[in-house]
Image (cartoon, rainbow, N blue to C red; front, side, top):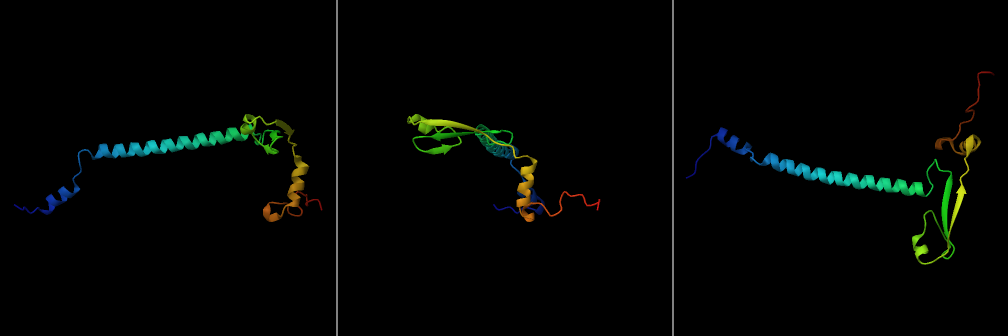
Length: 132
């Protein structure tokens, strides 16, 4: 027996939701949130690892001592300790250099050599013209 539905019944039937729809939506949201949190943790861990490695190599702006490793056997220079060379019994030497601070004069010299489009000095910059 085929029954015809009124427009109101048809609208109610089409707009009906499952009684479990909110729980399913919550589960989908929780799963997506767990994925995002996992990716954020991986990203933060990678950034922290890179920052530690950079600091250990002495490439931070605050560090004035640069450490360099030199494998005498392989004739290679590295910014980190060559574990493969050490495990193979190669002669590895560590060299430390003090990075010289450039200072104001060095900064000005560097700026004067750059093009103005690249951030270099413009003719007359820093001069007091009001006394003329």
